[in-house]
Image (cartoon, rainbow, N blue to C red; front, side):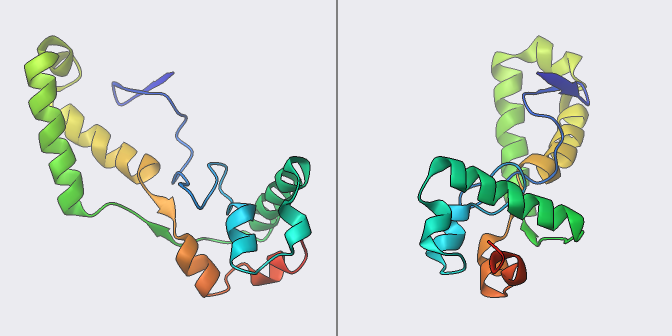
Amino acid sequence: MTIKNNRRSSRKNEGPTLQTPMSRDGTLSAYTVKLAGKIPEKAVTRKLTLARSAAFLKKQIDQKNITLPIICPSEEIMEKMFQHTVEHEKKYLLEWHESQGGEEGLRDALKKDGQMKMCAYDAVKILDEGILDDIFSKM
């Protein structure tokens, strides 16, 4: 566990996290790509092949320096999260809340961590717009 901005974090600051249908290492889930008809069935039938496909995809994205589109929670959702968290921290963890910088510390942590941990690559846009089709064709 690392501590960033005086707030505890169980993950390293890796950039947008990837929810299904994306993997956490920054690549599209090979299974999702297969379902979209972008790669052949054989590329995802075995666990080892799936891992190799994901590694290949990540390597290609990194080598070509491709910036993938992301989606993030709206400001309204982030504000609701902030209000909910403040309410509970003050009610159940008042000493800890104050030691972490109070509302200002929480807002700073949510602003920074929110961008890094609550955003995801937009798999629908990536697949629909064919952003990675040239890489998929090599799989």
